[in-house]
Image 1 (tube, rainbow, N blue to C red):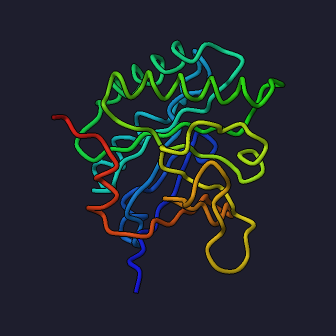
Image 2: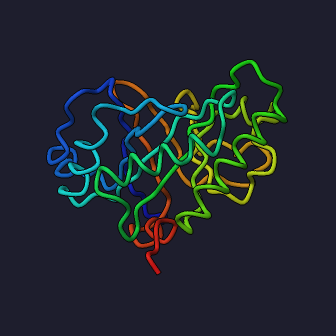
Image 3: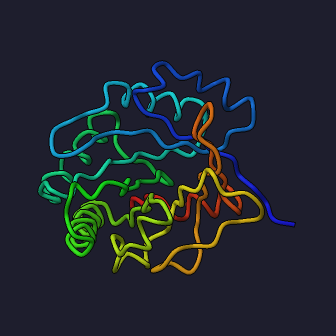
Length: 201
């Protein structure tokens, strides 16, 4: 029998989040939006980041990518925002939210994403998750990202586990619902999830 960890993801749209209440209800991990593009910061991120940590959840931060902008500038903005909120600790997760092409061709979106991830990995040693939708990946926007853990957004999927779109063979986290809150599942233990996170060594 598979072990399941349940998680949520939030942004400024949720406002104040009752992290202690979610932890008591069985939530084990969470992602909070930190940044978007090269200069936008989620006003709730610092409170969410610290609220997750105080409630002993596995902490994740994500950046909403804007492929028309510079990936290195966006990666630095994201990392600076996380650092100002308290920084990364062992087991923390990071993700690139890749769902907008900004009107660019798929190969240019994929190039942006690879460069953003390379920059984050170079500074942190941490391989980011890629959050995306099946159709977006199938259109080629995620080419070359198959070695990154996939956080699959498929809230409308009905039935057993959804298939992973190429270039992936399997997903790592599945966002299975977005009403009234984005809900996610990870097949594995807390230790297995944090192994995909930050290692200060």
